[in-house]
Image (cartoon, rainbow, N blue to C red; front, side, top):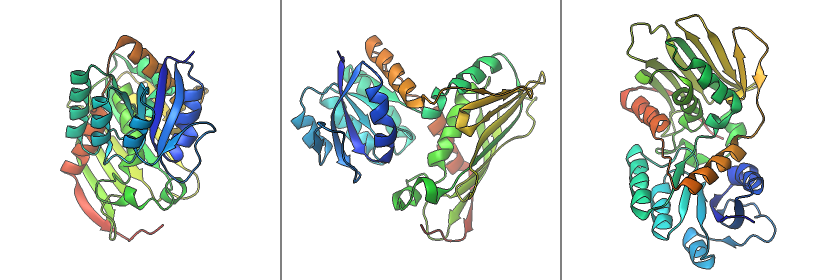
Length: 313
């Protein structure tokens, strides 16, 4: 029997496609309510509400909420849910600003509740294997190539290209979350150029330069672009000082080391998120990692801004 009744706040595409089946596959959870539907129908026999206040009142025995709204309102939603005695899981990016992430962590601690800021790309088996292989090594070179088609993955979602919507860093934070998970040394943004469409408030592409602050640093760069058509590219190439060469491809799902046949893990990012969440709940321990989000903020802080052609869906 499920231990935790869970409600989803922000029932859009990612909630329907990923969270619902992952919850169904995790015996510790039972989906008990959804709210703020993005136009799709909730699963059969699951109550649906117009807003999270109505959901919290209508299903008083909820234990947990998964917040899958756009990042802007997440801090206020999380604060209300924690005050109502609910544990919270946060989709990525975890909030609208880094400071808000710290506030959520503080409120969870004060309420004696668990908060879990999730980055689904970190939950690939290939990413975990890469982290183990790189442990104790020294980074020499790094190339991040994260190029996809905005119209394909976020059709008509104007909010994502508005100021505060993160633009290319909505998918780009996946790459940064992999870096903070696998690299043997902390990595920093040392320079950036962000490319803003003339009619939008968020960048559609970014060129990043990284640094570890070590004398062994070679070329450490990232190219993120939301204007890619045709094949989509999500890859990270790493070389260490001892000559190990490693490539994570397909968003972290595939690992190739020194030219050997690739390791491909199971497609279980979101089930693994909920498996870890169940363990955190059992331990009464929060996990609110802001490191990938901090790199996004640092890129905005340091970046040269370049205007490019207007973008329309």
